[in-house]
Image 1 (cartoon, rainbow, N blue to C red):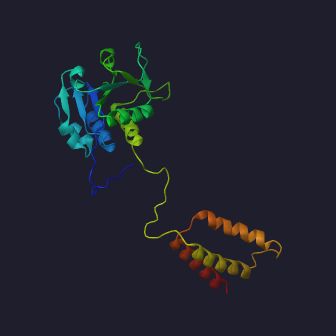
Image 2: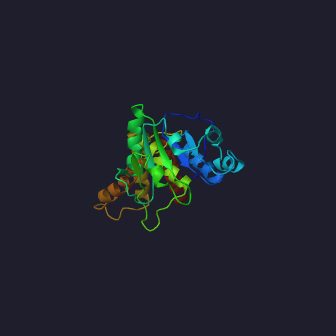
Image 3: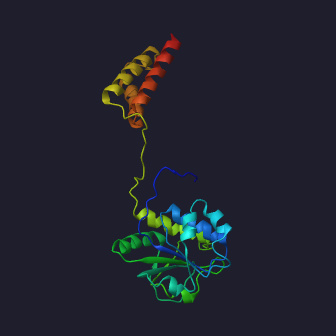
Length: 253
């Protein structure tokens, strides 16, 4: 989904560090940075990235999240990259022979909000493209993170994994209603406006001989009216419908 409102001021809040261990391609680092910025995350740490960094491939793939590439910190070891963190989570697509708690990304989002809300620094480890995290890196984490996906094909690229974790982090603190209807420059219709439309429509239906019998009229009219009652009409929509009924009635005459 494309679309960015450049007029809005970005809001930065404390969030988990995203730590990429031995990323091989600049493009993947750039796309991971873009995914981070989508979710309001800014702390990008790189452990032994291959080749020169930053590079033009990472900047191009960041697609507007260039500042994360510029801010990214480089480390010689994973231990150094996590030295200032209180809690470390390691993403993995496979089972490890380690006795560690395992969280889903959805659970992790809530956990991170709680810990960071208490002022405790957190970070999430992501392994290199082909093999993921080594056991030596995973052992540095207190908790593993596993994504419930198709068991026959659960591997994600770095940017996908970062976006998934970042999204759950963002959602855990988001207050956007699950459903809303923006009304723009109009407003919900009042009962009086609706009644005016109903009276006009009833009159037009009567003139068109819509009601089969006088006995059936109350039931038929109630059914018609309920259609519009469920619609949640706006003031503008009521005016449009009244104009429509007037034009149809005039054409018939």
